[in-house]
Length: 168
Image (cartoon, rainbow, N blue to C red):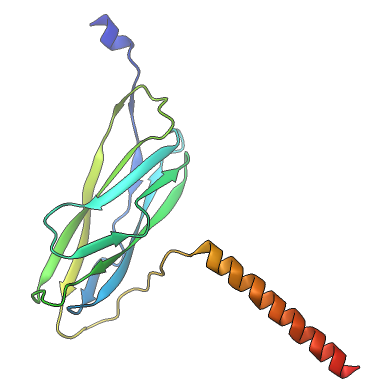
């Protein structure tokens, strides 16, 4: 019993926001984007967080990243795409997103791990939309963005050199 009292126990603290948009309207065969945030309490160690949709949800959900590494006090967006198969019935569907975070440094000793599964992803499959869905951009591809910046800069400098050459 005394040994159990000497084992350090940590309860990891993190928060998860509700997914945006709250209610997505999609046509059969269509996809839409969503996002939510995970925030780690400042006093916690670096944490690794993973997430999924509880089994039984009939729509396809793909997250942009499988997991995130968050530093103490940090907050990050989790983004994903939800797809409706073409033969899906017109009705409302609610999927539950579960988030699980654990100490990435493995310094906490014994950890009381808590999954947060109260975040509903609501989707209405409709024959005609009554509203536009919120725009959630895809995760940036850093290599492509940097490459396009370099190419754009080179084209700009060549154009500037041509203008200077012609004006003289």
